Length: 239
Image (cartoon, rainbow, N blue to C red; front, top):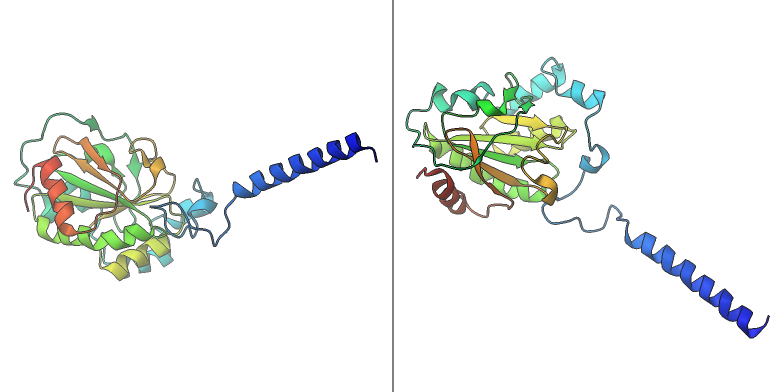
């Protein structure tokens, strides 16, 4: 082979190797580290939108889930709109600003009817968005349970199981961590755009008494103290 022909062959081989390497760098195997805030992606990446099977699994008439719901001990979703104890009496005046909650209705992960998010008004509300496949969500969840236990009639605490096609694992998550506050489900990622969840979860949404979103915290809380501080800062509720 002439010298010029060899140089051409080497160049082609080098280009092919570079393209192959670039393709491999763009993939991730099951053992590679996941982005921060995502945790072990057990099933989330396999189901970007719900399927008929996943929707059927979250129906209230699922006998298997009915048993799991009873074991989990989660407060019924009726409490999410009525407030702890059936009503909220000491709600402070809503701070100005914010944008309305999205016009979205989410099914209940526990027992009770679906909840239309704009109905979450009349009291300050903390919405914690989590999933059973999210490691940081597991670490911060006890802080929200403590907040719920201390809130009384002054604050709502509501969870949202997000992008999770495994409600049975989500219920086990809530049961194992002793979570008692109401839990909704968003298997279709309907809150992705409204709450800017492209950056990942957990995320905590602070909603004033007028049903306006005043802040979204894209972080995991390291302590109950930090969570209470943000509740005071953004909602004016001191616990």
